[in-house]
Image (tube, rainbow, N blue to C red; front, side, top):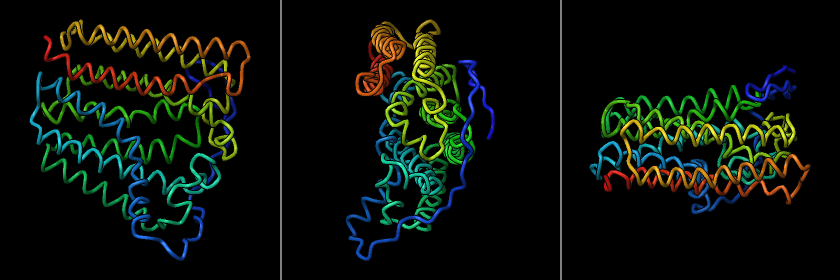
Length: 326
């Protein structure tokens, strides 16, 4: 057992030891229809997660171009991004197949049901990762290729293999992988990294924990059962809600830096202030319910989770539209 200190809350907690990956997945069914197999391989790429990643990548390309970027470049970046993130998602499912089998939320993943074998998943993940790097290198640019490969390796090795089962800060630092598509979108157009891309990187960095912690509050029993020390497992709802509010304020503050630095104008600012205000209202409401000792369905933690997706969608849509209004 290792003693971990939550960096922002200052609360010392004892995390559950990590358990080795590699347990045998469920036996493969005798009959595996082709259509079901195709769906299973698509599921390995975590397409719903990739939707969010592309939602932060494409608008940044419009901001970098200060208008409409080369649409073939946008398509190439999206395809490469899907392949890269898909490979990382498949690696994650390969490594986590032991705990996925014991969690209600993940019990129907392809390796658990046996629709895809561990060996097939590993080959598939490696192929997507290598293929995406080559794709970016020749069809976008080498800088974007290296950033894409770095994001994939960070998610696979740093988050999945090192942080996830060892520290309650897993989603904080592991979330860096999900921030890199913002920089990739900028580098695809400019072949460089700018302050604008770094600011938006930080927006996603501070958005990720308060986005994911409400969901992990909802499925806390799942994580506790398999020994994954997500923050809601090792700290009470009050402590988690306090962290959510702290990260939310920083996130909103960082989101407002683009305009003073000259990268955006009035439209983005109005959207960022309005959406940020609504976010803070939801975050403080969740904290109030947690302080009152409310638990179960009445805690309504998923309100903030669902709003977080709407927030990032609206904010980055404003990033794409703003150049046309300046």
